[in-house]
Image 1 (cartoon, rainbow, N blue to C red):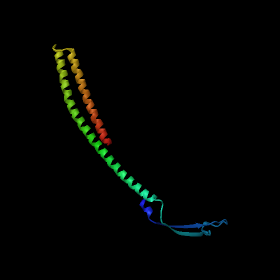
Image 2 (cartoon, one colour):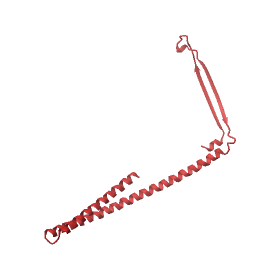
Image 3 (cartoon, rainbow, N blue to C red):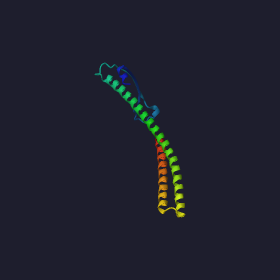
Image 4 (cartoon, helix red, strand yellow):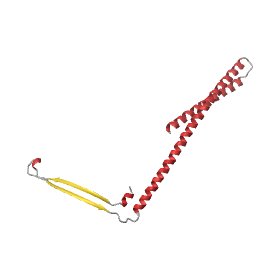
Length: 158
């Protein structure tokens, strides 16, 4: 668009007016209208504007290249973010699976500690330790579920 300012331009225009002024009680159909019609043509030939047009053309090209580079960079950042979100999602899924088996083992350990305590072979401290281990395993699993939900939300946002 800036380059076209180097080229001559031709503009044509036309104007038609119809005027009336009556103060004698005549109806609108009986007014005496005066019509005027104007037609014109302008020609603009750029001769020299101190290299302003060339500078604007160069600046527009630089802005275009800058926009392309920004688009490329934004696309790469978005791709990386999506890949990272998928990796987080997969990692969280693996952690949930791992923590599920840890919870099962902790439940089994807690049951064994209770049975040992009831039969008189274990102490109450062993039962408390097993219960703490079970609660910690459940907490770790919930953290993994939270991380998975967070990764899903991040992926949806991207």
